[in-house]
Amino acid sequence: MRKTVVILIPVYNSERTLKVCVDSLLAQDYPHIKEIIFMDNLSTDATPSILKSYGKKITVKRLSGLVPEMYNKIIPGIDSDCIAFTDGDVIADRSWISNLVKGFNMPEIKATAGYCGTVESSNVLQQAIGEELEDRFRHFSTFIGRAPTMNLCVDTEVMKRLMYDSTLRVAYDTDFGMRLNEAGFLMRYVPDAVIYHDHRASWKAYYRQQNTYAKYAPLVYMKHFGQTAGDSISMSTMMFQPMAYGLCVFFLLLSLFHWVFLLPIIMFGGIIGLTYYHDYKRLDSKIPGSVFYRMFLTRAVAWTFGLPIGTYILWKNKNMLSLNRLKRGEKKNGKGTNKA
Image (cartoon, rainbow, N blue to C red):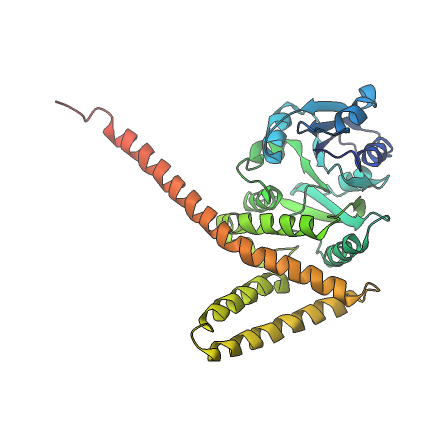
């Protein structure tokens, strides 16, 4: 299938992973790649000089703002058949683009997404993150509701029509996938289209990532409430654990008034422990269970504290939307009626 492709990559202070990323993209075996565009979000490390060293082999745009804002500045000017998205901390398999393009084998398919592996030089936390993520990718169905922009390819015409929600700091790819499905289009999962991702390397970075996801999750999922149950990436235990932790915190506060409220904490704590054990045994990993338990705990705590903030962000956005609608209604209804 002959489709022209432009690859779009946002980067910020990516000097540690950038060179292998660029090299892997330049080594693609697909002959119809029109351009490789790096969007540099005003990096302050060696990222600009590394990109400059490749000369005319790549295109570099110096931009600022949230990632979806940068995407939306560049996308209108792209004239290829498809746009492939990935990140600056990724190593792409040589046939990554070729396999993504092969996935467009039906008129209804307007996006394809591939498998996300883990770079070989990872530390134990990155390996644990990778093993769990790869397990979820191995269980994807042929058609999925969303996919991360580290391994995504979209029909350019549809991309220009839908664009990304530039108000979202994260989860704009989730929102895009859900809007794609709501528009009547399909996203095909292509497991042979492989990239290797350099996951968060420290517990602090992993906590901050998950906490940020939690802050924007209520806003995104309330926009697409009907699709929440069909999420193709998140597991049911990932949704349950933060709620269980929240209940534990609630009953812990109540226990200050009476010891009997310690009993629900013990019950929910036991259930959480069982879900950890179930998730770890499913992975059949050689990594010590203590690493996975700490990872599950870090993620659950990050979401427990992030979701209340996310609920406030949702409430604030809904109030702003209602106020804007009210103002528009007042202006419309007030035209020509103010007569002295």
